[in-house]
Image (cartoon, rainbow, N blue to C red; front, side, top):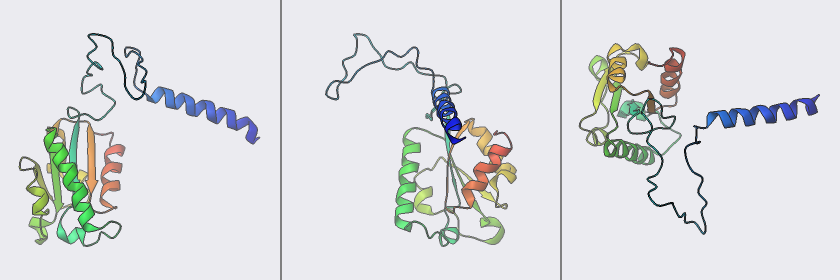
Length: 180
């Protein structure tokens, strides 16, 4: 019985793999020789795609959302060194700023319970970012957060959360609600 399913599974995975790739019919095939390609005269590279049609992340179709990078929440982070976490997040923020990608920072219970806000070191990297103070653990239940994401006008969200429970809830709820 297993021998029957193996070719079927292989064919299905090849079908999925080929249908998941963007259309490349208009892109000429080039061959690298010793790591260098010679392009035809006048070749200008891949034709730009409209942001809403681009299957890949681009500065025109993505927004960065960072959740709960605040001292009381970071105290619970045990699966990565705090310095490494801040360094990685710093690089992410600097890249988003460089490419003019909208940034939304969200922390929880600052006004409600007096929690410390998002780490100032990270806030300072993106002075034009939108800051949302939530009262809900689930950001999608916070109307101000949803409005900020909608105002960014981007369908592809790059999300980072300080705790492993923050992000699955955030991304899972967006998927269940059919996105924005």
